[in-house]
Amino acid sequence: MSSSLPAHLDTISPNTAAAILDLAAAISKAQAQDGTGNIEVRTTKRRETIAPANAFSLCFHASMAQIMDKTNMSRTALRLLFELIDISAVGNLISINQTGLAARLGVSKTSVSRNMKALVNAGIVLEMPHGLFLNPQLISKQGLATVAKLYPREVAAGIEALQERGMALNWTPDGAQPRGCHSAPSAAAVRAPTASQQAERDRQDNIAALLCA
Image (tube, rainbow, N blue to C red):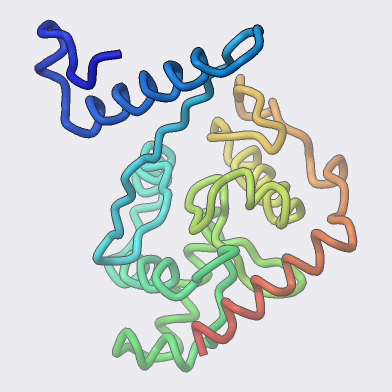
C-alpha cells in the first residue's frame, strides 16, 4: 500500500494524515498474515487539554440573575459570594470562619454575618448540619455527576431551596431533564451515601479543609 495520501486528501492536517497512514500500514500487515478472518480496527482520539490560568466554577447564570433581581443583593454580599466560591475548593464545602472572611474582605464580622445570612436566605448558600455549602443547583466546583454521587444530601437541599422559591431546577441527580420546579426528588427521597461514597466524600472534604486553612 502506498505511503502517501491520495490527492483529494492532501488538505487534511498532518496529524490526521499520519494516523491514516499508520492505519493503512496496520491493515496491510494484517492482510499479509497467514490465515483467514475479519480484520477489526479500533481507533481512539486523544483530545487536547487546556490548563486554565485561574480557578473557575460552573455557574447557572440564568438562575443566579433571577435571584439577584429578586433580592437586590448588596455589593458586599456579591464580594462575599465570590470569595466563598474561591475558597470552597472541592465539594462546595466552605471551610473558613467569619473572622477569616472578614479579614480577607476587609470588612467587619458583623458585615460578613449579615451578608452571609442574605446569601442563605437567597438559597445560594446552604446551612447543613456539618457546615455551609454552596448550592450545587446554582454553583459547582466539580462535575455534576460527582457532586450527585458524593453529596446527595446537599444536592437534595439545593433542590428544595429552589423549589421553596418557585424556581425551575437546573439539573437532577438521575440526569433526567428537569420539567419544572417540582420535578426532582425531595431530601427525604434521596438515599444517604454508601460507606465507600462517604469515605470518598470525607477525603475530599479533608482536602478542601487543608486547601482553605
